[in-house]
Amino acid sequence: MIKEVIVVEGRDDAIAIKRAVDAEIIITNGYRITEEMIRRIKFAQERKGVIVFTDPDHAGERIRKKIADRVKGCKHAFLPREEATKNGDVGIENASANNIRIALEKVRTEDLLQRNTFEKSDLLKNDLVGMDGSSDRRDRLGRLLGIGYANSKQFLIRLNNYGVTREEFQNALGKI
Image 1 (spheres, one colour):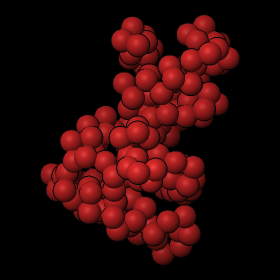
Image 2 (image 1 turned 180 degrees about the vertical axis):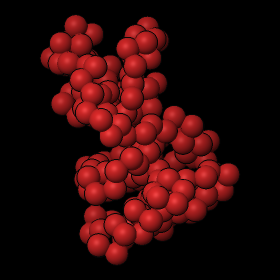
Image 3 (image 1 turned 90 degrees about the horizontal axis):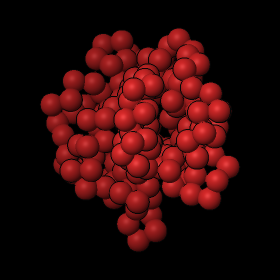
């Protein structure tokens, strides 16, 4: 049983989550998140906590950002794109129950204090930007850290905002 309320994009995502875990779910119905929906998510955050679990695509990231900007202290779960893709369709609804559970085990809480533990130089010296294969390295590292795939700018933001420590970073780098 997941104690937090899980926020997903659509009905099919909710069905996939319910196959994997016992949890209360809020469905945003896509990007057009109303004020009423934000109030519902804020109430859930105050009462039980919220895990934002959107599709690993551009629209999912926009929804995640919109919620995180308006509802502080959310937790975030990320699913690798290929684990959420079936016949060219990307979405949580395509993931296996096991992969959903793994993503929820790696949930990260957004830090309310802006941290600057990591800098662009950390990405450069670890071949996470500007090199052939940097995108693949960020993808693999994001999986291990539970922060998902992102371009270099967003990856740096996630490292700093999701409580990743230097030790976690170094250990994960050692595994890739």
